[in-house]
Length: 318
Length: 309
Image 1 (cartoon, rainbow over the protein chains, first blue to last red):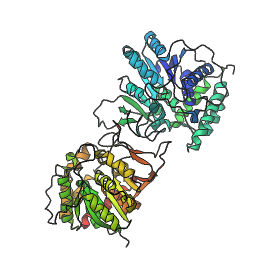
Image 2 (image 1 turned 180 degrees about the vertical axis):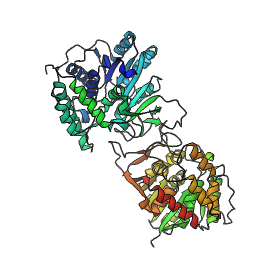
Image 3 (image 1 turned 90 degrees about the vertical axis):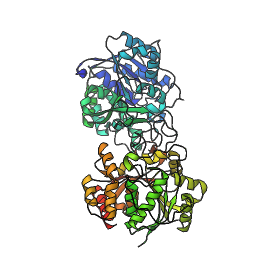
Image 4 (image 1 turned 30 degrees about the vertical axis):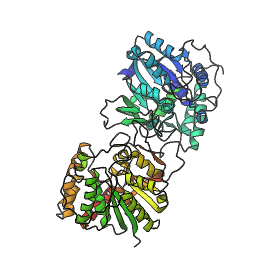
């Protein structure tokens, strides 16, 4: 059983409230060994997501090297999500300042170095646009065997969010997503199908806050901030999309997972960035992704609350 | 009874035949004309099939020939479901009615004018004829009350993972129709895959021995095999959905949405993009997307109609 082993991982994201909560879950798990952290432009500009990545790592005690990604997508013009995550990209509670210098390497260089130096294949947890991962695959095809799996938060088999057909992370850099999805590397895709069900309800916020440590207070504040926007859209809770990409690695039994071929639409008037799933095999292509489609919501919330609890006794100056 | 004036645009096909036979027996529908289009089979077949099914069932309505080809994409027929001739390779007695030569778009326009804004179009094939009609007659959009289509899907597809056969068959024409501004009822795969008759129900109807019942069973043998192969629960009566939605709306449920057709995608060509579940919605939401049907009442109604033919 692979989830009983300690898995080396790279965290690649654009924090972002839900990225931060995904990283909280990753750091809390003894099953994951965080080797590197890379930032990507998405929820906010690369300067902001990088700063946020460093602050989140300081908060959580992630001591891995952190490198900054490209300023934007491979081909497309950048899109950000300031309406959801605020002007800083991680509005809400105060966070500690970065506690260590940024790596002099770029994100792709750091990823490559990390893969080369790891004796075991590394799992990449990509919770932003696929820009860095795609650039890595283009620049270092020889390192593909060193990637155990890529766990992606992105896409949606049945629907989109940023457009009717496309989810934000894939829409921001569809060409990068296409490179990743056609790479042949084992993929797990946590799309909107599951992440919009991964709701943390207001009563759960209080359960998390009541854990009573520094991280639990920050996470509860993040959830409240994140929920404010979603409540206006009619959500019953905060959909912590990115945390699913970690949770499904840690506890696959909490999730409904279906293997299928997924194609990325890079053209299209309405569908650019759509993830087209082929559950009935109509395209005659071998499956390329384990698609996470459903979950045991209460089990997921329990996992988040237990993760927060592991930060008891850990405190940093804010 | 207030009868609804309707036009039937069809690529007659085996499920189109059930839809047409149903129209003929629904007392609240007033069928003003039929136009044929290429789709399930070539136009030469779909035109004759529409004429011959009318003859078989005693439906005395003119059938007009429409488009032989989609606007821009190539024609792909569906012989695995409908046979080479469109009616499961069953030979129907030829209709003695004189052949209309007026093009479908002209006949439809005249019918729309004559109905003074009350005409509703039931379109169950690729939407080529309607697109040509909207192109030739800009005011047509003000003359039609509603367009009810069998086509598309809010989720998934059949001919590709993202697109349904009728829309994929002429995506550009479909986009013209969705953008025309006329209210649309979309009976896509979301509902039509639930609107089926079990093989036993098909056989029971066929055993009734009337020419229409025998034709129904015999023409659907290929389709039954096809649906078995794709593990559908029975014979999906796709095209009967918009007919019964108009006549017996209480059997169905759905939601208002914005819907547009992808015409420039590579893997999404022909997708009916709906905004039912996304945070972002289209500005114009004039489509009623039918999502569910009471299967048992639907099947009972189809049986009742076919047995009354």
